Length: 78
Image (cartoon, rainbow, N blue to C red):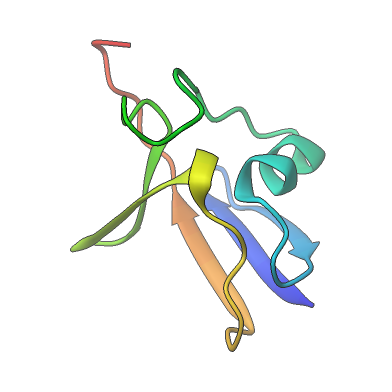
């Protein structure tokens, strides 16, 4: 199991490796906006660190990490 922390609200949930991030977020009560659900529109883009952004709609919990912090931010254009 991997510990997933959603910022800025510090919501923590356990997830299985390979579980889709949108499913994990939904289970935790965290809303990540979506658009195309194919990664093209970037509506679901979240930040893992200052230089690493991912699209939650096409990303799953990666192997080899005990903890993963996902920083949600709001794009006013969406």
